[in-house]
Image (cartoon, rainbow, N blue to C red; front, side, top):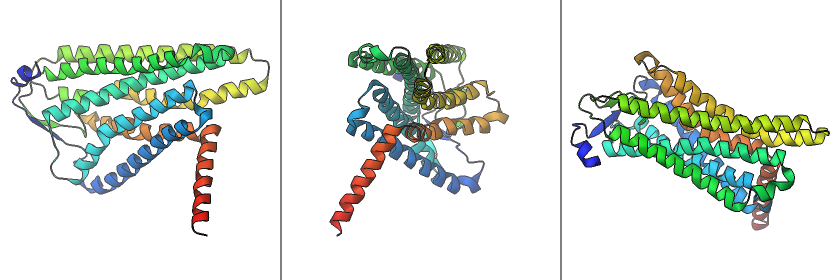
Length: 319
């Protein structure tokens, strides 16, 4: 089917414009994004390793957090390497199949992360509102099913949206006014009727955003109601401390998504769209491990022990 659709298109490659309108910023942007990407990889891999090696962190909350870190690595790695490449080489082309593949994976990982954050909100709801039944309610089987469900739903939505792009005909300009294969940027090059694709994108995007936010808000309404009824300040502080990092991550993630939704995709606003996409695909994956590690005593304690053990072994080695 893909081959049949492809035969309608005369475009076999796309050209990513990136930030070509600012040639003097290419080198500084390359160094900036490379630094951020390095921190993203080290930070998220560090979170995954720390959760693996610390027995105290073998809980549902950290199980979901390790998958969140994995998703951050994945969707950052879909966009950032190509962004770094087009900042330093003259050839900014990407094949049709490569472009569709990039969009498929970025779409899948973003939607999966959206619902992973919702699952984590439900986990916090159970932990705060039913602490005595937490280990029973959040069983290993349920946690695995919730994670598998987020990946499957992300994959289904991504297949649908990618197909809606592939079925379009591309016979005019092949210059994508973006640094990656973003949905509206690709669709703007179509020379066939884009109404089905636009409707599919609108329905899926609105449904996913509404559902994930509804789950998050419902969970935190119950959490706040439970916390207000707590008699001791110690319990109050503990409840809020377990939710602060998650609320911060949610606010940044959905805040930038809503900004992208509200941004008009006119020619004059494409630079802002690029900047917000950079924040979404490059900055958020770096911020999440910092948010969760800086406010988490168990994570910080494990990092300190690892550093102390490493320094101690080096001291013994060079004595």
